[in-house]
Amino acid sequence: MKSLKVAQIGCGKMSAYTMRYVYEKGGRIVCAFDIAEDRIGKDISEIMGGKAKKVKIDDIKNIDAVLQETKPDIAIITTMSLMKDCYEAFEACARNGVNAISTCEEAFYPWNSSKKLTEKLDRLAKKNNCTLCGSGYQDISWGSLIGMLAGTTQSITKIKGRSSYNVEDYGIALAEVHGAGLTLEEFEKQIASADNVSDKVRQRMIDKGEYSPSYMWTVNGWLCSYLGLTVTRQSQKCIPTTYKKDLNSTTLGMKIKKGNATGMSAVVTTETKEGIIIESECIGKVYGPDEFDQNEWTVEGEPTTTITVNKPATVEMTCATIVNRLVDVVKAKPGYVTTEKMGDCHFVKSLKI
Image (cartoon, helix red, strand yellow):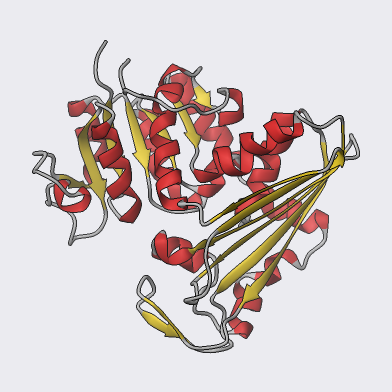
């Protein structure tokens, strides 16, 4: 058996955890990439902490040559939140025959939001015998945990979820996707208006690659696939969140004025042929001093059961899930394979293959 060789694409806040976790489980980072000039050339230890690893962060422009030279088993992509923004990183991995897993939230189940891009990646990954997917906090906390809860239920009428997280913990890309810092007028124009459309118009936007799904849009699709449900209709509504006082955002580098958007609540409602409705809400915002992460899901039916987790460590859980999934991805069939098809994520003691 050998230690897993890992490439890190994106060396921001999340990579500090993913890279450290890789080493702690016996794997090793063989190359790393970023676009930021102030990171390029640094040893990865300056991001993750600890002793020098003798691995310099390279310019993403050099990714093909470096992947061919270092030959990683898998890449961890911790950059953006939408498939269109992560596509080039996924494509680079696929054309070089490198497996890849991403924290990109849409990558969790992109078949119902960016089908054409996903199909392209699927074909390229199959051609070059590698596997691509998305994972993170939602893989268990919004996914298999809820699926297993459903397994304790005789009949189900509705699955209802609500989860919140502080966008300050994840970086500027995520904060901007949530509309943090916008005035309410700007939020309506840039974020909410995309969902004030008919189902036909929304589908045309999806077909053209112009739709921006909330995190629960892909989660609901994943859950339906996991549970064997057939989607008949899905809708989304994004509502701005505000705070009673001005809030400082270190991630955005600005003060969010009282009454402006600190982020958003996105509610996704999915109807199925089987009659089960999934209504999930994610709340991502810059927190006030009295706010904290929560995750609550209810499976309504016989019996009705609710599970609540207060103050989950969403950043650490996201990165730990990614690292615990690495071997699953390496062993999976080629193509773009969403994680419900890999089996439930389990604790991995060692990254050996």
